[in-house]
Image (cartoon, rainbow, N blue to C red):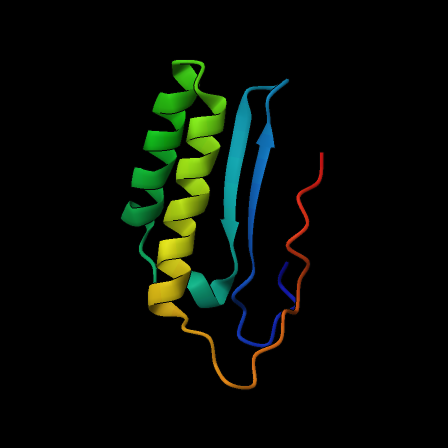
Length: 89
């Protein structure tokens, strides 16, 4: 995750069995995004999970992270996808 040129990798990890999730952002992202933003996303995902709305919580998190990335890190002409976008179960 931290092997990208601009340090803009991000991982959303969900473990339903342990009822845990993490949003891990690389240093390039955290230089531009404050902790309060991550806390708001975490709180909303957590609220959805408490209601048993796991899919909704995950979708919300992905969408919010996407908004952050697209507004703070627009695609550059020479960008290449340095990490896989593969969802793994």
